[in-house]
Length: 85
Image 1: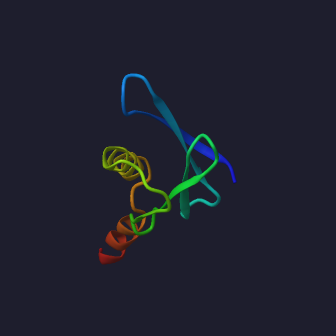
Image 2: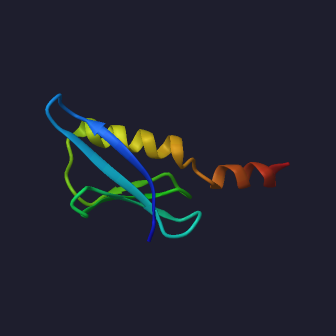
């Protein structure tokens, strides 16, 4: 497993959390890991679904989901559109 990206999430002025995003294979599951090494979520870039493994405040969840969708767009849509033509 390798780390692909890191994201700094500021949820208050006093504290900053860093989440790491790792992907074992291209076109697969992206793991969201906190600084302590806990798996927080898994994102499937084929479906765009996020499966949460731990509880986070909704603002952090929304921020992470938005970042994942922007940086790992759903791959199926591109292939599906090409098949239609």
